[in-house]
Amino acid sequence: MGEQRGRRVVGGTLALLVPAVVLALVIALGVTLWGRGDLNALICDGDCGPANVVPPAALALDEVPRSAAPDAPDAGTVDPGKLQAAVAPGLADAALGPHVGFAAVGADGTALYGSGAGTFAPASTTKVLTGYAALATIDPATRFSTTVVRSADGIVLVGGGDPYLATKPRARGDDRVFQADLTTLARRTAKALTASGTTAVTLGYDASLFTGPDASPTWEDSYVSADIVTRISALWTDQGVSDSGAGLADDPADDAARTFARLLADEGIDVKGDPSAVTAGAGAAAVAEVRSATLAQIVETLVRVSDNEAAEVVLRHVGLAAGGPGSFDGGTAAVKAALTAGGIATDGLVLNDGSGLSRDNRIAPSTLAQTLQVARGTPRASGLLADLPVSGFTGTLVGRFADLKAARGTVRAKTGTLSGIHSLAGYALDADSRPVIFAVMSDRADRDLPLQAQAALDRVAAAIATCSCGARE
Image 1: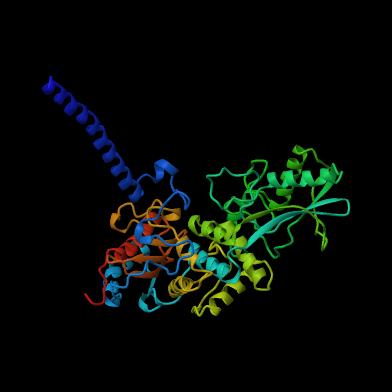
Image 2: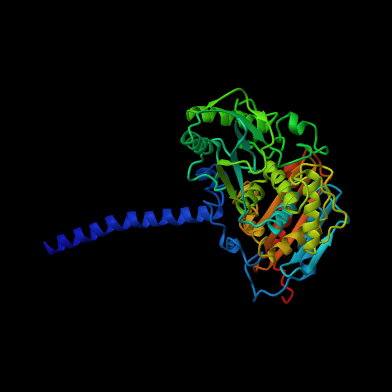
């Protein structure tokens, strides 16, 4: 009996042990796949976003990082010659075309290596400058209010330049940048009106915070006509996606006001006639408001997903904060001033917008690299380094570096892409965790081979990530 009982104990132990081992292996495999980013598409349909993805340990940064990359005091400095040897083959890749520029600096600002003279059309790496200027000029905790105020015979919906104002509240798991919505504003407005005995109003709307053209004269005509980008406005909802479902609104402010009128009606307030464009009176009594995400959260999202509309709205806020107009001209002048104030070289810099949609923009690779390095040492702007997409994991880099396993998770960079124009600006950790801040740009690539050009840029960044570039080796 004892022997049989012993066999049962052994058998029972094995019956428990085998599933436990299998479960442990499954968990280990899952952790490995998650860490490599292989589950992004399955779990999050692509970019898991900052709320759901823990960046690889090598690139983990504080919410407001103290430096552009983890400190590596024992790794030594970067040898410029070794860095040049590592990146030179990639920079010579035919896929990048005949006009290629590169600049790299150390975390302390020391110039490491550069090639390619002059400036380049930057595409969306322009957002690096816009993001830096915004954080350096405006308190990152700033929020933008969309308000309703009293008018002589009704109310006025006043746009405050919230680039992510939505029609409806977003689910708790959505990007934290969506914090204000017209449905909530309508409910608060209706409650205040009803409490004062008002159940019928006229509705005006005021989008006068921003001035100048709502589309850059240097943009391709098709950008607006083909619904590639929304006309920029201080008042819109869902970034100008028409309430009728017919693409982007021709007049985002008017469309937002009509949506708001409908939402007020749902709350029992009768809106007489159609909304009309007005200018709210100075000191008009407030009825209700909703507030945007913080500027820091807005910049994080626009950099990570390369949001053109949000970049143009933020550009106008930079112009206003600097004492100029909220326009293309006012914003770009303020960005240049912020760069100059930061000691960043701006030789040859030409800016026409904040998003990089303009093919007439010109930026030197050294300006991009220096901007990131200066942001590192600027407390208000240091969050820009943490905003950059992680190679193979987040934002516009989620689908890249697939064939460069050694570089997945060791590069953070902002992408830039227009037809024939490709750029990458960020930082990489070399094989021994030495940080290298870099920018690589190409603006005469074959327009028919965009994926090959992107892959070539990725190989340049990967060359840094896999280089043992220590000066004392």
